[in-house]
Length: 205
Image (cartoon, rainbow, N blue to C red; front, side, top):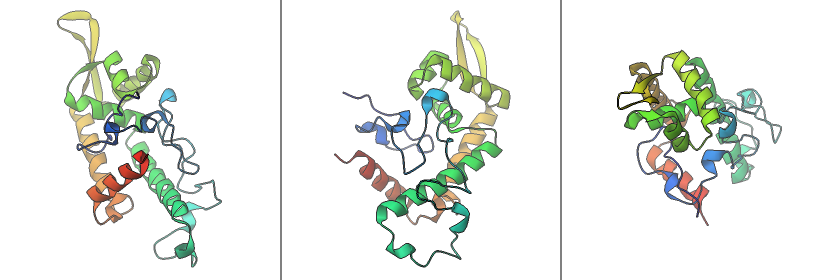
């Protein structure tokens, strides 16, 4: 039986991880040209994504604007609409993260540190990556000032990873950006319902 997924990094409520869709966190789902991530490389969700070239079906993201929508978009199959929307949002959010010195892998690590300090191995297990991959993610976050490392007072051989105030701040900002920004999911009338419908689509048997 597959283990449950970790919660969505930008959502504190019920996660799709309480279902069978464990491939989400390991990059097993591809939305028509954009992988949801390759955790094994520590570069989750950033490969193949761009706001100027969504690839796959030859659609250029720069050509799709609210004030200049293609005349035939209403005739597109629903799957194509979903694929293009996913790629556009993914590319925009990647740009936001990059501007703050973050990757999707780093964002997920910060999410798991909201519950308190963890060892590198514990954090790697929570994020479902190898210790080696997590080591790179931790070092990136440390250099950005988003986490700190210190020896465990009870066992000096254990090194604990802790989110800094700066890390908590950028995580909160990312959550707000995803939910409220008009060019991301702020365009959705009912965010929570939309999220639940996505979970339903992903986990349908």
